[in-house]
Amino acid sequence: MKIATWNINSLRLRLPLLKELINETQADVICLQETKVPDPLFPFEDIIKLGYPHYYFKGMKSYNGVAIISKHELIHVADTPDWCGRLDCRHIAAQLKTASGPITIHNFYVPAGGDIPDAETNPKFAHKLAFIEEATAWFEKNQPKRSILVGDLNTAPLEHDVWSHKQLLKVVCHTPPETERHNQWEKQGFLDAMRLIYPEPQKLYTWWSYRNRDWKKSNRGRRLDHIWISNDLKENLQAIEILAHARDWAPPSDHVPVIAELTL
Image 1 (tube, rainbow, N blue to C red):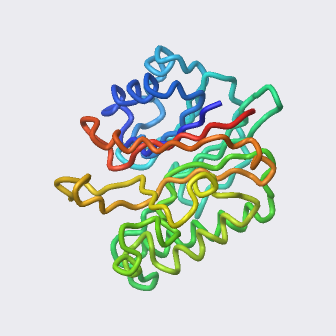
Image 2 (image 1 turned 90 degrees about the vertical axis):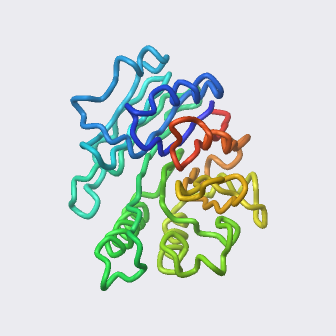
């Protein structure tokens, strides 16, 4: 079974690119972030035509938004928190029926944190840290079993998750306050699936800034998109694929899809 995650940066704008992703990977489940579409305007008819009759979504106009679309039956997990009390459509969860039993999928879009890595002067950075702390505390109390957590977590936690560890230590996404909290969250019963397949010191990136005129040449990437699996799924993980060439799809998202293949 293939499970994909992608910050699509506007679902309706990039619906043709979603079709491209499906044609190329035939993913069973696709988790999308930054869909930027309010629920009444979600393009469910198009999603069904693409071969995904099961879906769950939570969205708002212009910002944020998450969705899970699936070839297989989904059961909505309703008792998830409203992180930081903001109702800002950054997390959904669903149970996926598989031959070996249900799998819980969490789809997250963590706040980016703004530009200044100082919680006292930058409310966006403070919000990001608080969000991660809340998620950590929740999973500590609700230890994951047969669970997969994916999404744009907006943190590149490891030295080789960024193009320059030294130069980005004071840049939001790779600062110690973020990476320490991110790693503590992961420790609440999860394994970093991407690093199980491609351990450090291999460079792994899933995001390249729009500011780079030639993203391939500069290759100043960051690994902001993640797939975590609960400890009991370690032996089920078969492969990880990062579709770096999707950064050239037009109009591009600055993120690229990541696909995990598991035996389920």
